[in-house]
Image (cartoon, rainbow, N blue to C red; front, side):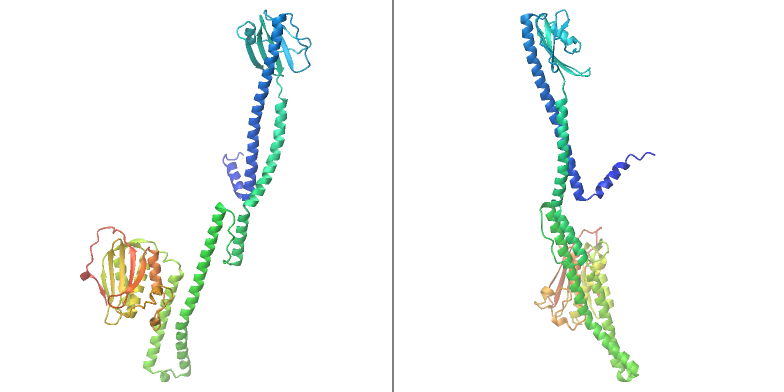
Length: 483
């Protein structure tokens, strides 16, 4: 059964990918050296062959000129031919009638070629040719002499090239082995920072300790990799520290309402077991105690919801969409009225389109209204204004309360921060921090200032976008007031 044509390359690719980086570098180094040696051998062999041929041809020309000079003086038929030395040079005289003379005992040369015959007839002065048809190849030089020509030949000898090739093969093998060793050594030295980086990462994974930075070693890509991992570890440390602080702050904030709730419940249970609940707690006191329990449960529920929002680390998983911020503000005001009927909200909103997450934005607006409602007097409404200012959607919520002290302004958006004047009021200190986080997530910002009515003015700026279609302006007379 034949294998599919593309299977072998895929198997080779998978095998290569499973090799370690050190093995890959070693193989690459050895292969590069082997290819370099092979190319060098080919080039050197060609150069050596050309040089040997040029030397042999020069020698043939020199020997031919000597023999031609002797033939011109003594005549082609009478010139004394040098005896055959047993190897190397061979000579031959071509007479005018086409016959030849050779030294006694000399091996027979190939027949005179037509081109060599034309040289003997005076068509040209000389000719260099090769004859590889026999077992032994010859290089034959023909030179015009008198009424004929003389020829000097040598057997083509490939032994120097063969010896050179064998030597280059040995050198190549040694170079490949040495290259593999050098490549592995270089790979080990070059990847040492990676090995230490891997060991450090394994140590962090096993010990869960993020405090130790990895030494910044090496250069180039390795250094940037180590710096990136150190930055990642620093971010993880900051995240863990933030989680720890959140857990500690949450435990602190939960402690007080839970303690109060537990004491009130224990009091009711103890009086009920004694059968003195009605006598020990008159109807008015019992109603007040139950109201306190309800308020404490509501406070715990609000705190749990806000802790969930903060613990997420982002605004939410909902998708971003194009929406009218005025609709979000009106919906948040309606929710604030239903949750706390005593809050009076006066709306002055204009249709402004933004790209955002509806639930997160409504949560932020609701927190702003709830915060203002804590401070605004009963006869003074919370004013909510929404307008376009340049390329921004500007939302302002102000109250007629005592305002925010200058010492508290820098920390008003910190998590769990509550001014001294707000210690006795309900709340967790998370509402405004959620507002700032929502604003940041939408590319905006949150700020605090003093209202013209003397209270606090909280402002949120968000990037505005073009509406999908012409939207009618909502005038102040058409605004809805939630009471």
